[in-house]
Image: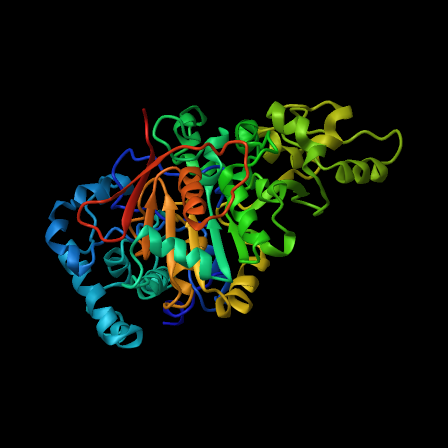
Amino acid sequence: MDGLHKSSLKAPALEIIDLSSKPGSEDEENLDDNPSDASLAEHDDEEDHDHLSLYEDLLDGMPDQSEWDDSKSFKLSIFRIICNISEPLDICTVEESFTFRKRLRLVGEDQFIAETIEAGTISAKKLCTAFGIRPPPLLDGQPDHKYYPLLGLGITRELLKRVKLPAYNTVDDAVDLLKTSKNIIVLTGAGISTSLGIPDFRSKNTGLYSQLGHLGLSDPQEVFDISIFREDPSIFYSVAKDILPTTRKFSPTHAFIKLLQDKGKLLTNFTQNIDNLESHAGILPDKLIQCHGSFATATCVECKYRVKCEEIYNDLKAGRVARCDRCVRTLRQAKPFGIKRKRSMNGITSSKKKRQSYEDSTDDEDYDVAVAGVMKPDITFFGEDLPQTFHDRLVQHDKDLVDLVLVIGTSLKVAPVSEVSGFLPAETPQIYISREPCQHVDFDIDLLGECDTIVTELCRRAGWELQHEMVKDNSIDVQLHEGYDSRHSFKIKTA
């Protein structure tokens, strides 16, 4: 049962799919929001650790008890469509799922496991579905204990969900928190860069994923799957030019974070973006954690030689797989003068066959380049661990100091960054700023609209001067959403 109790902020990249989102809604996860895991304690079992990288999580779609009467519209067909399921599947009903979740919170994890898995009343595979988790195809036919790590992930996430603080509701409350807080964590995603024209991942018609049908992938996210990259890096390189940062300009929201730093209020900016614009905006290295890496550098997958990404820029723009110069030099130095490599009957060396799917050259003069290590930009792929600095900074430093959390421009659909909100102290107020509400986290105040518009209005109300060429003297219409005490929309007034 150990797998049920082990999970980690340090585990690999993993996507969260929110069943409560409206079909076709525009999510603000940008290619700057590149992918990673799950929850909070150590996960030492290597096999289970590897499995986590392949799990896509359908958590967070189940309703709270207060929303139960409105949840009848939740259809099993939605689950089946998203999971691409055509055969009968033994899964928990919505009613069963709600009962299991309620029981978990009532009796705690140990007693819950004793009453279910250990008592043999339900399989781990089926119980996973009570927490909205898709049983991954790679575990089909495996013994039930293989599902323990996945079930443990779902249980941990359920128990970590935060409860809204009732004291904070209004826009004025948000402004007061900004003015009085001294150690603010800012967690950012693609929404802070979209005003600069940087494309996102998931927008229905304009996001990168919607443009990848020609690649023949079962899931467009495979472009950023580390196992796919290792097998055929040309898939990633074929779209790299579309995500490669081409600007050093930063948005008013970047400038807002810099303003917090200048006022001595910024504890840490955890960014999921890979465009490195936070650095261009002036966020200091000791205040910045690039959770998903960046395009600043690239590393050879074979010899680990690291270079600035400018050195492979031409390859990235051309859609050509970049090879390691140091590997090439080593291969040429090791090859005896005047002796050509031995070929198989069809003119291709046996060691070359595996690579032939993405390398066409078989000329002697190109051979050294063709077998040299592939250069991978230092962005975090699905299945890769986040930088150690993410875990260390959050757990060993920020957790005990933070007095306000701002989540800006991200739908929190990529773990473990999505876990930060629930990991931090429950009494710490949290404000959410984005186009659409985040359905699976109860923030204290939701400020909805364009990020630049919202932070500009907050600064105006706080009496702060936000200097940026894109900031205009616009009148902002702020409206409270019907049926909510703490959800507000921001729109520029039109004449």
